[in-house]
Image 1 (cartoon, one colour):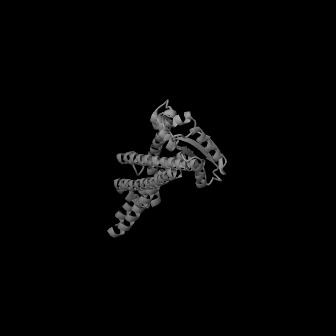
Image 2 (tube, one colour):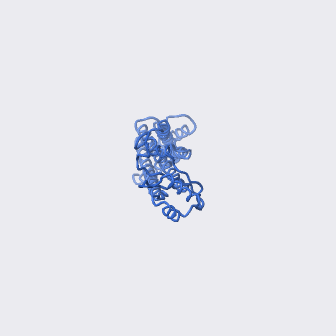
Image 3 (cartoon, rainbow, N blue to C red):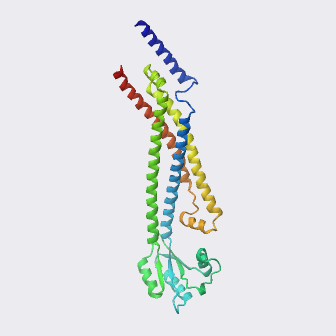
Length: 329
């Protein structure tokens, strides 16, 4: 009995020295710094962060576009004059412009000339379109006061009464559908982001449990001879924080490169129909500084969440060991 007590005492002293060395000197960590499981977790975190960063950027881009569309409809509307037999198009356009300028809430009214109309039709009809030979509607662009807009119903009735071939289009129905779609995409992006974060948390939990299983004997000896749960959890926390930070930096940086590449492509191909369509919907397809800040915050969140999840998992596993040990004894 005395010999067993002496051995137990020696074991506690040895474990105590091990704990002190781990606290105050460089030593082999409890969790191996580089192994297959660690590299796999880093890759998974990089992929998850990449997808989450794309979601953050897309949500920012769509949200900004929706705001820009709403601002556009608050600044101007158009009047379309359809060509009819015997209609003097030039006089009709001038009559519409005069009526618009005389209405309350209108700040400007301009007639789109042949060159501007040709540029609008160029993606479909090509260059050099002769508008005199085609029954093409003509437009009058009316600038409105965003703070004190006109009565669109009354303005439409006045213009139609003076020029029956004219039709006021305030774009509200079309833009309203686009804004609704954009908001739905934002909600879907938030849902996707939440799912990615949940998947990341579950991955870290399984990886932490796997690391504990691989070092179970060392952990149990340290724990039973007096090493505090916070010390052991801190070792795992620092290890998984480094893995999470590296993976998040790789994934977030790749996502930023994707958005930069798309912005560069739309800028260098602005004259093409494809780039024009993208620019019409999303501007230059570049996220602003808020989007990049969001990606940086996401990287920090993923790294912190990885460390916190690992620490919490270790503490709970050690609590489970404490509950099982008295029963086994």
